[in-house]
Amino acid sequence: MNLPLNNSEEEPEVSMSPLIDCVFLLLIFFLVSSMTKVKNKDIPIDLPASESAVKLRPDDKQAVVGLDSQGNLFWDGQPGTTNYLHEQLRSISISNPDRRIRIDMDEDTPIGRFVEVMDACQFYNLSNIGIRTYDENYNKN
Image (cartoon, rainbow, N blue to C red; front, top):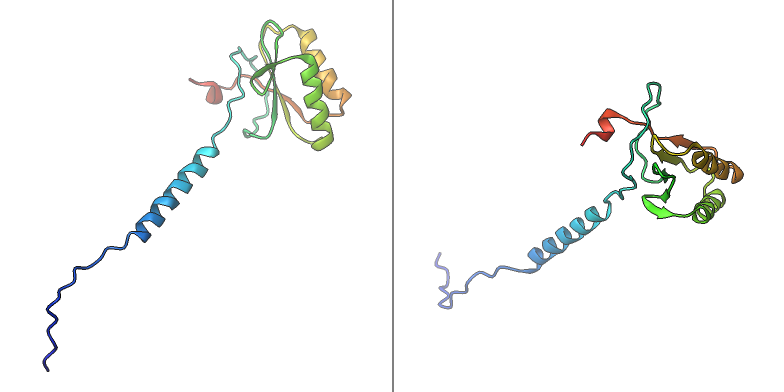
């Protein structure tokens, strides 16, 4: 059986649309994966040591109140005032009263400043409060 010969030889085409689809999928993947970066809420302080601390898994949704050695207040790693602390605690008590609040304080923080933060939490009926202590595995550099 003889097949008709086609004198016009066509070169095969490479379709670009699957390649473009793959590039867009990779772009979306890298954009989404870079958005899940954890916000650093830590402040440079010397944490107190504890031998009987309960180890909890890190939680990105917890609020972090920081107190440095001079008694300066930080909310989620950013400097703040006592009024700002009360505003944030009030909004937490309204929206999510079971939200975990972690207090990071320096060893040399004035105890009166710590009591102010605890009183503010108690005023807004927030009871899921923890105090961060030094942990070798978490704090190693």
